Length: 289
Image 1 (cartoon, rainbow, N blue to C red):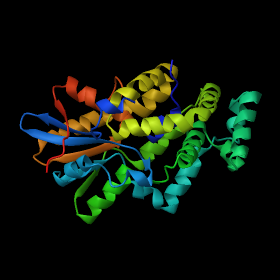
Image 2: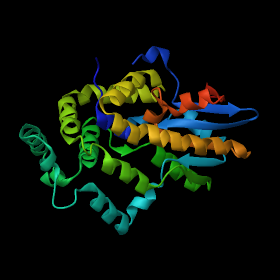
Image 3: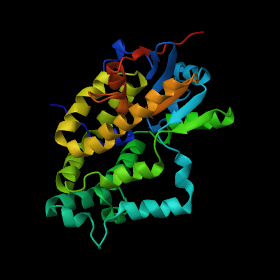
Image 4: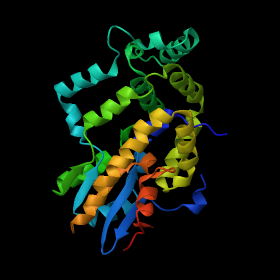
């Protein structure tokens, strides 16, 4: 059975390329109304720009641009303090108190091998994983802003209305709760998968670029089986909450363009599958000239 690293899901929020030459952009329709939904990666490489034309076509044809959260909220000193508070255990505890001697030693050894600060060991597992994932993506050549940041910049330049599905505090909250009560297996599993990242990350990136949700579906389903609580926090609860907000978008004549992490569009609990089950028509966006 294939293994899938949790940190890939986090950056994808979270190949048979010959069969998938499209972009991860869909048109969702019901009656005479429609919106667009696109899957994003939050970190990309310079080679990913310019984005495929399907992204810009949906942008041009939309009135409102919808993002997961307003990333600018994280720029304030107050929010940085909030992150620091949520990233660590209370009562003087740290990750060492929840790991076996062997797993803690392996984590410390990895951080030292990458010259990463050992203060990371004071963090909760979700923040440890986020920090490691950013490092792994950087090593794989992914070190520039992703789709959501790029399109938000374009939306500001063109004075398009921007809407957010959740707050940045919501996102920090779910990361803060990832792996709590299951630290040993959560960290141990991640460490066991790190060596595969040089192969896995490019494969997942290619799946995103070509809109191949089937590649992620197997991994998402396995992740759900191995870590049901983490999956529920990261995917199920958020998708269910967002579906209600997406359905309300059809109450107006405005055309929304919704951008969410690609992982939210893959697997049995994906937003696209839920919308299809509710009677919406799902079509891949094709470039028109």
